[in-house]
Length: 175
Image 1 (cartoon, rainbow, N blue to C red):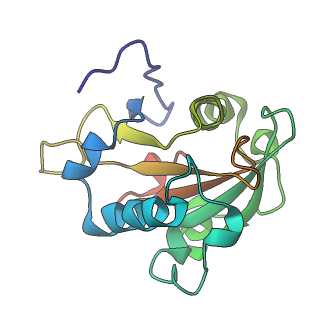
Image 2: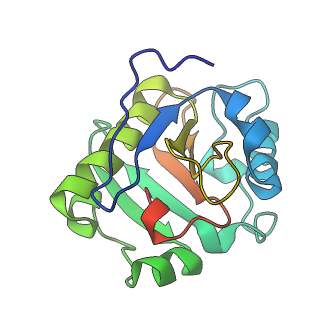
C-alpha cells in the first residue's frame, strides 16, 4: 500500500494518524469494521456511493452505538453532527448531536477531523484513519475510524457515515 502525499495528522493527545482510501487496510481490522464496510458496499451497488435512504438503521443495530452521521453542507466545507451513537457520546463525555464540527471540538482537533471529512467529500470515497503506531500488543495497524460517503444524487457527498472501531477509546476518536 502506498500513502502518496496524504496527510498524516497528529492528535495533541499523542496519537499519530494516517489516512487512506485503500480498502486493503480492512485486512487488518476488526470483523465488525469489515462487515460494516461490506454492508456499505452492498448498499451502493454499482454506484460510487449509496443514498442515505439505502441504509437501514434496523440492519445496522450492531454498529449504531459507535456510529455518527455527519451532514455535509451544500458547498462541501461545512459539517454538522446529525446523529452520534451512545458509545461515542460516552467516550467524549458529551453529545455533539446538532453541533458543527467547529463547535464540537477544540480548534486543533477540529482541523484534524475536518481534514478527514474534506478528503471523503473530495474523493467521493471511503477514508480509513489508522494509528501510525498500532494499538495495544498487536503490531499491525488497524482501522481506527472508517468514514463512508453517502449521496442523495449520486454525485455530491451530503452525509458521511463515521464508525469508530471496537477497542478504540477517546484517544482514538477522530469522529
